[in-house]
Length: 598
Image 1 (cartoon, helix red, strand yellow):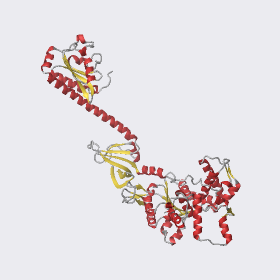
Image 2 (cartoon, rainbow, N blue to C red):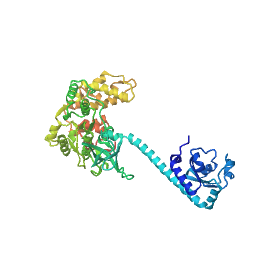
Image 3 (cartoon, rainbow, N blue to C red):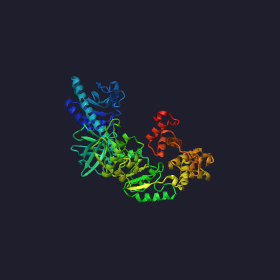
Image 4 (cartoon, rainbow, N blue to C red):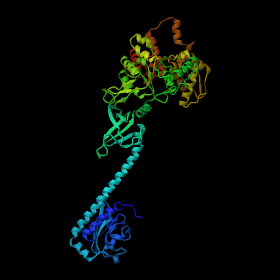
């Protein structure tokens, strides 16, 4: 079986050119490929087409190797014929061999052969004309080979692209004329939940919004409409067949990706809440009752009581547990940025924003749950917008005119007295009643002493595992000391104290009084020794002194770095900005450069 070659692939064309040249030149013509396989032949060579010439084609082999034309005036007697087995019985009188080239490579040889003295004289009589004719025929064959090679390359490229397109995660639609689909990959069909046969009409309209390096489009198929994010490109190489290509992903897929990046859902759920006190058990029962509802929930309680844990517990016990849970701290984000965090913004919405736009938390939480922590710190102008979202269930990105319907369950939380804030015109009354449909109050840790033991054991086991330490026990007097302490920072303060204790633990794995923070050792009858001394002295301290003492205490517990200050602000019931201001006013040194407080 002959090895594959481009000339063998276009054999019919090569035979036709060989026949034309033979009739015009009145001589014999044969063509061999790069494997010395006879592709075409006329006259005495016609019956030997499709034969292997590798045993005798010495001249052709030389031409293939050198890429140069050869004229053999005395076949069988010249140097190139010395080793040919047919040298003594050669029937040829003259032979002109010319390479057929494809680029820099010789892909075959075309031979013009005079098999009689008359034919030899005819060739020698006008040798230049025969050489020119031979060159033209070689060029024609080369051009056809190049065309087929390009078609083969394009076919392979299209097959490769088809395989790639079929396996990429993004949807790809290639349009023909008049918004008809010429090609749709598997991802496009899955994301649009439709078969999308070739020739189907699909309307794609830009909404004008641009987010995260992608444009937003509204896709309409029959009576169904989809919002997608992607890019549309015009195609110029074959506009009669293919006009545009849309590379996209569904808005839902984009949301899922951002959710994976930003998700900070606490690990505890409704039935993992730690504590055996009556108040904790009652709270768990309330969570079970309200979880299936879609009504808004307002969680109140002191800082550090675990309001986000309760919010996530409601989500996990609800019908939306397989949807997204988005938490945002309204007090930790500067006012100018809070609106964009909640509602998102499009490309070029305002100076200083990400030039590519960003998706907001409400849009990200669509079909799921959004938790608005420290709702009392939300500025009044945003309270108006939040009220409108609660009433209309629609949002508009900053800088956009596109109205986006949303289905979100809202859970809010605060450690402030919102009714008092209403009286001071700091919180809208109408928003309060919209949020306070289902009120849940979390008792401070000092009112549910039974939970302290459970939580201490839980945190000790967790941090021992994290630090690669082996925990044996907590001594009873140490546990009693923990239970007596009032825990003004609630669960958060207890957790940080237990983390400190595990760090201080000896190799015996016992948490005893030596591992306790100093401020826990001075507890007497449930009050810190310093407070007890003040009471006995019958003196009243300045509020500024008390404030300074509590701020120092909070920084000692939570740390003086940026993360510690955030936790300290939460424990003190103030915003982070307020804490920084008080640090500057009181000139409190925390062991870091003072520029951090400016």
